[in-house]
Image (tube, rainbow, N blue to C red; front, side, top):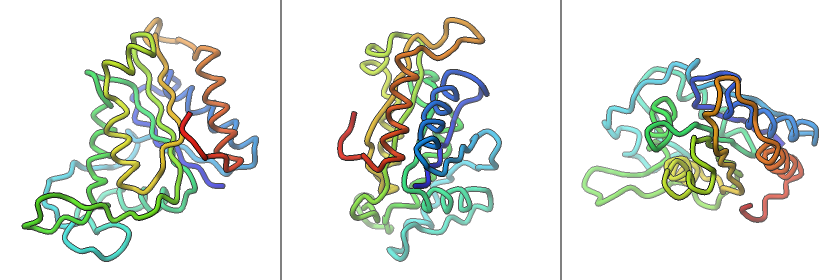
Length: 204
């Protein structure tokens, strides 16, 4: 079992990374091979909407003409059994660095000029995904009012990954050195154990 987490946070050691680390540690303890990608450290350009990558139906994804780290990162994710997408809430949604990455997932669509809209290349979902976010309000209110999971869910769908769990950490701006609460840590560990064991039958 190979698992890669993509972290779209600007604060190393913050609540989002702590949550990811709990999940990955539990997965590793269950025998999974885990890796963490810190998006701000990668060279990723903005999508320029040229749609070159969407014109051919061949392959799992189209070829983006932009020369940066995207292709290598997507190759790594495609080799995984599960992916983690993680971002704090900034201005009501994912961070800019995460949004920049997610917009590049258009390469998983077939959308030739003249078509009304894109069609997904992915058929049956063969990978699993867990989505992680953190916000200032309590987690229930954050889920209700901040659509942070929506763009990550859309990217997972395009990629061909089934979302099997989410973690929303509420009250995440109490202090600059805040520690992850016990409940969120426990949920992250449970999801890590499930991924390592291949127990991905339903969303929890």
